[in-house]
Length: 435
Image 1 (tube, rainbow, N blue to C red):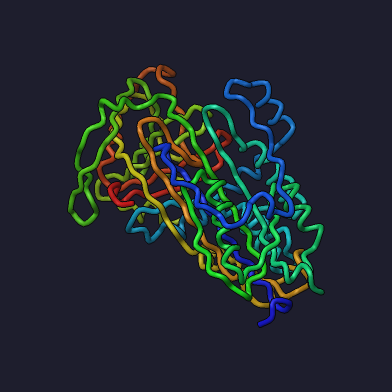
Image 2: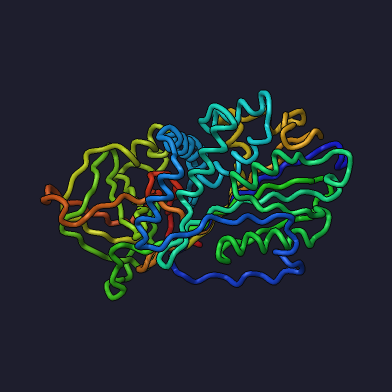
């Protein structure tokens, strides 16, 4: 198959969340990453942690409609119900990373291909998608002395195509750069150095927590990469002196020992729901990490069985305020998953067929050949390095009405959410001792 005939559009989405503040060394590269790029974006300026006026100005200049926030979370629950349903081991999934990668692909789609993608993304047209993704990007972007939340996109274009009769379209590239802050690289996919370059880009964007395994592919002529990286500190840090070794109960009846962080809050919010109890820990940049503990006898799979059920465990239930006892295992692990089948199950089929319509990208034959996602998470007494879902509860906000024990000594679900309520990560911890 000649490159000038077929474009294999590979979308790799990678996400990282880890609170240990220990990162792997960024691998040595054979190619200068900065000089290899055709275009690199100028990312939005970060505002200081206490720069409330600067934060307000960014919010006023980048209006994100309630409908778009709802679309992001609907996408999160729909996809998570497929990605995590069969989880029998630790899993971490970033819906917003997949959303941005899929949105970038959608900007080059037309016809039925575009219609299926827009339907899953919950947006009516490309103009709205570009505007709302751009505004949301600038709202979420955080880079200050306390916290970081960075979404990065890049396009990798094969030199042989762009120099031939079939070329990548300028309008698409401009939208990718301006609305999605995408870097653009002109590469040779048959050269192993391209994989080194892509791996270095991913490592730099994720603070060295993720890498990328690339095998030279003489047929591939385009790749979309998305990364998301987050770090924030607990509003109330755990006292390391109270961390103790304890047992975690596995599904098969066995137990493992691991370090548990311990805390007690006299007045803290929690939710008593159908088959679960939920409570959240605040992070300093107003994001939050939510922990969902199934009731005894209720399985993880039951709580993740449908999009509606996932929405209920994150958003529904009887809200109470009272004493909350926390016992959280320290953990660090990574996940790797193929998301192509998930997209197909949810109605995106034409994009994977050889006659898909990506004529907004090129006049050549273009179709998505694979969608991969790798993730990483670790939490400790100081905080979380990640994109996050967590519910904020302030001590002393109301008189105590009850008591909750968030003793996470058996498999549980967690989520991380931005200050605007967008779900960034959803994960399952089946065994905190497994990486």
